[in-house]
Each structure stands twice: as C-alpha cells, then as structure tokens.
Image (cartoon, rainbow, N blue to C red):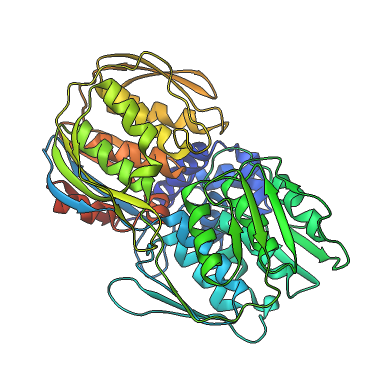
Length: 510
C-alpha cells in the first residue's frame, strides 16, 4: 500500500476514535502536547507518524490504534442472523478481580486467586504490580493466579503507561497509604464515560490521614499517621471503588471503623469476603453500613475464589433474547440479577431457573438459567438504574438493546454517566430506532429489523458489547472495528459466542 494511502487510513481511524471519545482536535492536541493544526494534519493523512507518536495517540484515546508485534488494531467480522444454542458458564467477575488484585497489596503473604478473568484490565493491573516488585504468575489453564508481594514495594519503578490505561489504579491509594508516607500515582484512565470525579475517593480517605494533590498528571499523596477517624466515615458517593478504597483503608487500621453509605454491590462483597479470610472482621456485608475491625499487620497465605460476573451473565441473556435463541447460562449470580430478571419477566421473558447453589467463595448465590425465545413487549415504566439492590448501572445498556427487540416504546434513563446514552444511538446504524432526548435519556422503539453494517467500536465497554450483540441478530455481515475496549472487560467473548453457534471472526488490517 502506498505511504499516502496508509497515512490516510491511519488518520481516519484516529479521527473516528477521537470523535467516539467525544473529543475535539484541540483536546487531543492538549493530551499529546502538540498543536490542533498538527492533529488536523495527522487526521488528513498529511503527516508522517513515528511509532512513539502512534503509541501516544493510542494511549490518549484508550484505543488500540497501534499494537506492537501486530499489523494493526483488532476488529471483529460478524455473520449475523444465526440462532444460538447450547450452554455456557459465566466467568468470574472482572470488577471483583481488579478489586482483589488491589486488596492483595494489604497482605504480606501469598494470595492465590482462582479463575481470575484474564482480560486487558487485569493485565494492566498486573503490569503495574510487576513493575513495583510484586511477583505474579498464572498457575494453570483455569486462570488461577498467584500473587507474592516483596518486602518493600518499589514505587519509583511503576509502569506509568499501564497505570494510565486503567481507572482501577485509583484503588492503589488505600493499600499504599499503610506503608508509604508519600507516593505518587498517575491519573486514572479507562472507559470514556464522561467526567467522573475522584473527589469521593479523597473524601473517603481523608479521615484516615491521606491528602492528595493532583498536578502534572499525577496524584501526589501524603499520609499523616496522627489522623484517624473519630466518627463514622460517610461516603459522599455510594460507589463501588470508593467503598473498596474505604474498606482497604480501614482493614489495616488498628481499631474499629464504621463506613456509611457503602456500596453493597457484588465486587464490594467479594473484597469483604477476601478481607474476612485475611482476618479482618467486617460486620454488615451486603448492607450500606460496614463495621470494620482492622488488623495492623496481615501476613496470611490465602486461597480465594471470586464469584461470577452478573454483567457478563446479563450480556449472555441479552444475546439469547436478541437472537431469538435458546441457551442455558450456567453459574449466574442470581442475587445480583433479581431486579433485571423481574423486569424481563414483566416484558415477557420465557425462562427456567435451577435451584440455587453456593459459589466457590461460599457466599454468593448462583443458579443456572435457560433462556428461550420470548415475545417481548416494552415495560410500562421507564428503565433506570439504582445502586444495589436496584437494576445494575452496567446492565442498563443491555435493556436498550432488548427494548429494540421488544414491541413498543421504552424510555432508557442513564442518569449516572453524562455520555454513555449517546453511544446507544450507534444501534441506529444497525436498524434500531433510538432517539437521543438528552445526554442521559434515549427513547427506543421496537421491534427492530436488524441489518449488518460497519461500526467503529464505542469507547465505553457495555455499549461496545451491545453493538456486538446487535450484530449477532443483524442480517448479513457486520464489522466492528477496534475492539480493544471489549477485550478490557471480557475474556474471549467472540470465541465463546462462537461455541454457541455465532460466526465471529477476528482480523487485523494488513
């Protein structure tokens, strides 16, 4: 391919990735430390690009525009209109996995985590852990992972690029504050879901003596060990990672800490069960008030198995409903999908569920669900998320997809994120009737006659998977370009759907 055509193709990919992130050329220029005119030349294919610049652009847009050792970003080609069949096991929770990797920094002993989700988000955390001296190794094909901390972490050697590509790095604040009086962390990255302030984390950790200043692309942390909570710690946001940070701060504090307005969500419960196994007593697990009896030093060799992922389970349920298929989804964490299933039953869901049984962590309730082809109709009320035990925020995009399959009109209200509802309008490219009312609300009218097309992958994880599932139902062949964001949150999703009868091919540009 001539150089000018290659540069034009790369330029178009950069432009599309920038627009999907919601950035202007000036915003990308600021992130790269260059000028808006230079970004314009790049997008027009009028400027030669070094490998270093391509890598910097990829990092800024959180998009695999360049991949070392490969010819280009990864894409998916989907032959749609096929019925799925068979059974599939739900993988363990991605969000619990990254929380547990951060919590393992509290333990001086060896932690072995069972069946860890082997995804890009986990890989980024492992790269950061390895760079600061933590030894990790995958033990077998079941994705059991061993974590052995050093006597002293080498924070100066932190892999900054890996840290910037995951929002989970914010959960290093609490574990590190126990053994380091001052330290730095790079700004957190991850999905593009609009502005998400880290102030709730600061509010949660300030009573433990942590002060953070954000300058120059880093969080600069100072710990005053004379400061300790004198009353219950009240979280200003009932967030999952905020609650996990507060838990980890309290876990090695010598005393009793009460945390109020805590998230009782699935990944928080897994971190609670892990800390309990380390010897930290926690009262109120599964409620919004947690009482933590801290242990100043933790040195335990521990084997722990996180529970299954309710969001992946919802993805698979949606795939069955949208393609009109009968599949059995095994090991569904039913207690974290009860509202979703009740709403789907109201919409006409036809399914069977097995008796409940315990997950490998000994606590979470699981069941097997058989989803059958269902004549769905729009719900009577709008669909909106709520903190657990309400409808999960991460499951809301799947209801936009299911609503497009159902008969009638559905209002989807995503009040949490400023930008995510915008990405749901990508379904219109496949034939859906999705009207954006404002940055938080979309109006969906079904049923949809899906038709194949080519789409650049949205930069937010759940909307990206929603587009992929719609492609399974679409007649003809579709292409989903630049799917790094899906690989951040799902392990071998395309390959596993193929085992159910889907026809998804992975490819890269030549």
